[in-house]
Image (cartoon, rainbow, N blue to C red; front, side, top):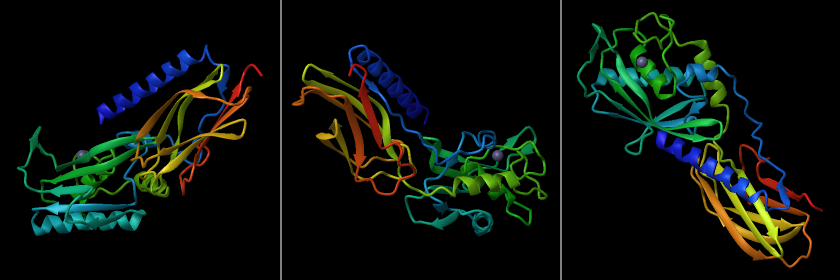
Length: 301
Ligand SMILES: [Zn+2]
């Protein structure tokens, strides 16, 4: 995960450098930036979760319980049901390719004389726009829960959903599990907010620079899917003063993945160009449509 973030940071910096170098040469200035305005989550989200806006791609999440005694299977399934009743989440069992893996085959851990109830958390997170998308998670159900409510399983499941420990001993996310603990209302509210957003892709422009030198057009374009689902094939079209100039096919892109397109020295028939328009076409439903067009206008004309 950290490596992914580093690569993203590197690409971003590299992109900035490219536009910086080209800027002094170019008579055309970048005039549009994407603005993902359809999701403005509350700030406290980053405190309750390990990272801000952590969620699975879809509200339906698959799981597989591996070699657990019946009692723990029941406990885990009860925990799923409790969250299903409070939030839009739905958990369904699969034979393979699960998003949440539940295991019981580890010895108990003793730390500072206290039982650590179990372990759970996301195992693969991808940054995608404003989301930290959880692609998979793991639960190790170690200790038997003696409570009427499946508090150990709930605690671990909430870790997998991105939630951190609570300092309130009555909260199920308190580090030491007790029977009188309940799920925080703020946790339920955040899950409801996060999963109210549909699982859709969001392909958009990230960075564009372009130059026309003499009669030759060059451009650097970076695109990224910052949504919650794989983006479908799309067409990138470039217009010079509203006349179609180039068309490039963009393949499907996974969540958080991007493409860099470099165009070098394409002959321009028109003598004078004052506006370059980049658009992404043939996109179906998306989280945000405002990042699908960018216009660069000449400074000189
Ligand atoms: Zn914990």
